Every structure is written in structure tokens, then in C-alpha cells.
Amino acid sequence: MPGKLGRTAKRRKALLRGQASELLWYGKITTTEAKAKELQPYVEKIITKAIKVYDDNIEFDVKTTDKKGKEVTVKNVKDSPKKLAVRRALMGKLYDLQEVKPFNEKKKDFKERTADIQHPLMEKLFNEIAPKYAQRKEELGQGGGYTRIYLLGNRRGDAAEEAIIELV
Image 1: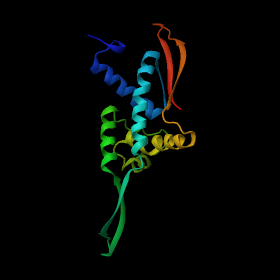
Image 2: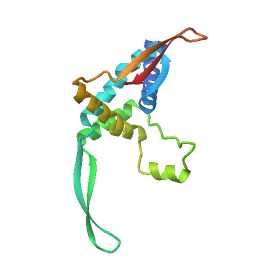
Image 3: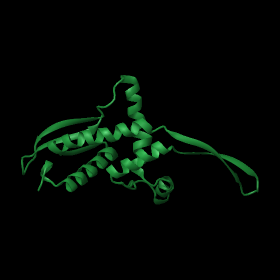
Image 4: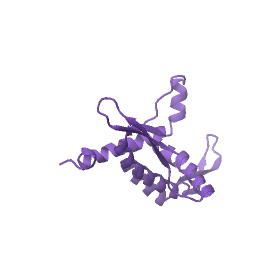
């Protein structure tokens, strides 16, 4: 039996997951008012979790030998257990979008740029979005309010109220 948004729980979660992924990737999407209002708290909670742990890393030294047989110490950085747990939890709430090669970029350059990135949406969330909103939180002294909804009017065809939801 359909519930909220006229969908079963499984289909509704898939819808929210897909729209949240698109919103975080592109920064703005157009949808219906009802879907935007359901999506807003879903995305805000994801961003809040990312902000809490985005800079929680562990640095350690690794001793290796280079081609000449000389011993070299290299600094490595990896996620702390807490950040890793949050990253995995958020991966369950979002789809893993892959980066699309821009028209004007060469294939070789695109492969070099994206070679070491396994989960582009997670990288964007933890390296771009979370630091931006953490800085905003420090400056304004407010957490939350990461998204904004604009109403556009009725859609042609079915007269559903359309809205734009965007990251602030």
C-alpha cells in the first residue's frame, strides 16, 4: 500500500537517495514541491554528519625504499575509524555517481585526474561541501540551513507544484 509521496517505503527511499545524490553532485535540482520538502531534511542530515568528521584524519609515516635502494619516509593520511564509519553510513544513503568527462577535456587528462578517486560523490561531500559549510557555521554561528527551496508554479501537463531545491 503506497504511503508518503504515493510510493512504497522501498521506492520512496530509492527516490530520496537518487535525488539527494543529484542535489549534492550538481548543487541544484528541479522537482515537485512535495518531493523537495521530503528531500530537504534528508540532505541536511547527510551534510551535518559529514561536517562533524570531515577533518578527522590519521597521519602516519611509512618507510619504503625507492628505485635506487635508498630508504625514504613518506607521510600517509587515512580516515579515522569514526570518519570511516560515517563515510560508509552515508554511502548507504546516497548513490555513487561517477564523474562524466567534460567535452573539452582529453581522455588521457580525464583518466589522470580521476585515477585515484573511487567514490567521486563522497570525495566531493567530504572535501568540498563539508568544509564550506563548516566555515559558514564558524562565521555565522549557525548549523543547518544548508538548502533552500524556491517555488516555481504549476507544471504543464499535470499541474503539480514545481520547486527548485539548491544548496545555499
